[in-house]
Length: 305
Image 1 (cartoon, rainbow, N blue to C red):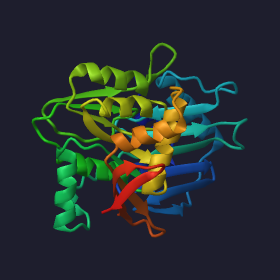
Image 2 (spheres, rainbow, N blue to C red):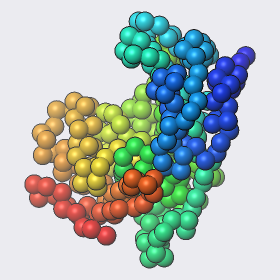
Image 3 (cartoon, rainbow, N blue to C red):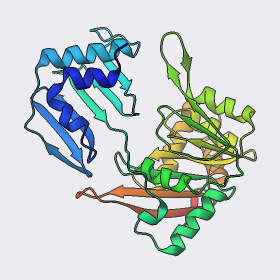
C-alpha cells in the first residue's frame, strides 16, 4: 500500500528537495504558484510552482490513504506522514485555490544545556519536571514549545510512570515506564483527548503529559492534576498571563456549570508554573517569562522568576 510520504515524494516531484532538507521546518503551498517555506524560523518565498491538477491529485490520494474524503462536501484535509510530519490543507469552495501545509517533524532534539540559560535556571527547570508541580509551556505558533518541551522531558525522573497523551506523536520521551496514547478521529473510531485524559487516571500515572491542551480536555486535565497527580502541557498564548486566560476559555468549553471565578481559582490552585517562549522577527526562539502562580485574590497572583 502506498504511504502518505511516497505520495508527496512521487506526485510533487518539484518539492522533493524541500522534503529532504532538514533545515526546513514547514512547506506552505498557498496556491500552486505561491509556495513558501520556513527555514530556521524565517519564512521565505520559493521560485517553485506545481500544477493545480497535480496538487489536487496528491491531496486526494493523501485523503484516501488516511481514510478521509476530500470533496466539495468535505473540503478539509488533515493527515500525518510516517515520520510524524503533519499535513493540512483545503480545496475550493472554502479557498480560492487548493492549499497545503506540511509541518515537518523536527529531528532537532536539544537538551536544556543547548539553550542560552544560566546554570541556575537550568537547575530550577530540572526541579520543576522532577517535582510534583504542574506546569504549562506556552507561546505562539512556531515559538518552539514542543522542542523545548522535549528538552525538559529529558529530565523526567526515571522512577515515575509517565502517561503521554497526544493528537500526533511529537514528544520524544525515553522514560522506561511509559504509556503513549493518541487520539483517533475517523468515521469508525472516534477517541477524543477528553477520553484519553479520563483513561489515563485508570493507568496509575505519576505524571500526565499532554502534547497540547486545546479543547475541553483542559478541564479533565486540571481535574487530574488536582487529585494527586502531576504533569504539564503546551498551550497557545501570547504571554504567561494569557496562558491562564486561554485555559479559562478551554475549561468553559467543558460546560461544567461552574461560576467564572470558581474556574479561575481552580486554575490557580492547580497550575504552579507557566514558561512562556517567543520567536522574534529573525526567527530566534527564547524563553521570555517564567511565572510562578502563588494564589488567587480576584486575579492570579504571579511571581516573576
